[in-house]
Length: 299
Image (cartoon, rainbow, N blue to C red; front, side, top):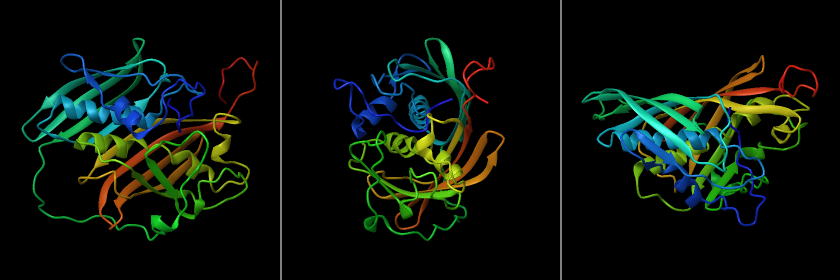
């Protein structure tokens, strides 16, 4: 189970969270046939690697494993926490490599323990036979919104602006179970798979906050403190080419919250309304169990 947001470094010598650092972590290094290495970041306040970062690393690994095809979709289940202070080993096992479609099984391990596993779909691409897409939500454009400044989530080189300032630490401010967030990176990476990885990285940011939003007395600021949250599964599907240095709108809507879980569906649009990706996120959302109860940390 992976964390929802990046923590800030508590060690002045630790690497800063920057766009370049996110690229370094997700631009996995080949280690032989089907094997890749994602480097460690270093000390942080909360030593837990985010689900979106591991999903982004899986996207890059699949793209490097089959460079003749485009990564169309990646889905991962996160079953064990990974630490920022140690590297991640990534295995890509191509179950099927056809001329049109490829299917790859992906495992991410740390200290020989499985942290997450999933599947990637790759495609040789084709011209449109037909084309249609979901319409872009009617929300405020990014230029009139203020940058989001929540301690522990800042990444230098990334601008995040939340429609209606709806990502609010106040647990008594309620609203519908949805969040609309504009994101733009300062620099354009030099490869399509790095654009895809940076696009992927923040898909897991918004589900917990959106799920808590309709419920007075609960808010994202309580995560990892008075309530236990984490991403357990995430899927991203890439529809069209994307440039992360241009404004992109992430629309996250909760389809269900209950029984200790929350499920969201999301779409990503360019500023001119083009749908470039869709995503789904499943999150754990439950109370901490009192210490000494004898049945573990979570209710």
